Image (cartoon, rainbow, N blue to C red; front, side, top):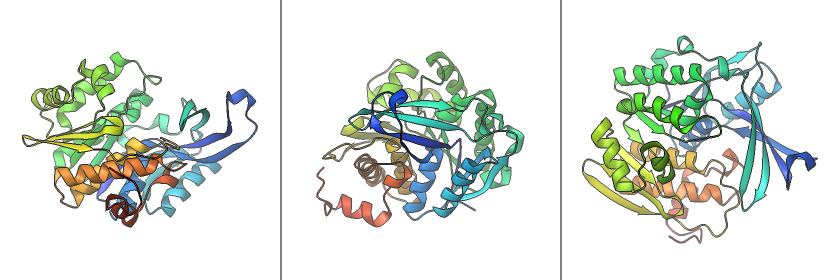
Length: 317
């Protein structure tokens, strides 16, 4: 059984090959996109095992997604193919500087009709970590209920729960996000908020205050606050670790950087590393991802990350 289990929607992504509004685009590249599968691939490439629970359409895009992640070594045995609903898709419109504007078509996707009774409880209980993203909570109430049930199963079995708020205000309101997450924070063992998310969710923009809020009010064991290019600050067992980021010579594509950071955190803990060394790993992977185009295509392998950290790649810290 996989060490890390993720739950969430992955879609087929169409990237415009030229900058500017989509209405003028006449060529696209096609790949896959999903926070949970990004994390799963990152975990596998760092030498660990990961499984993904989801639903896709019984269509060519669904087959593409399943074949892609099976080929990456992710366990897709708990991904259902739905003949009645299509696989979700989205388009990315380039706005320059490695940034994109996204347009999603997912409201009636196969994942949108997921439900708690579709979960394989033993599969979740057998993992070491369950990773949940706020994007899954935002899809719709059914997806949120499924994620919540998965967290309850994990909590009952002693499986550590890693939660990345991954706040997407285009998908739901700040009020909806706060209300939904309020019920889930007490089950979280590892929280990965960014400073901007702290502002929206808690009205706090100081990393120390964000961490104190999560640990004092909800009992979250480990809080890692992401501070963008400056790296991350970790809080665990009374210890505070400030881990500076690596400097990217050029940001090519920021797609999936936060997910890769999450994979680094999980792998550091799976390896039994200290919080300091774990954050260094996560920062390195995140930086490497923004330096290359694509999504999972940009996620590095373990030996590449180690060389990066040791400075053999020419990147400075």
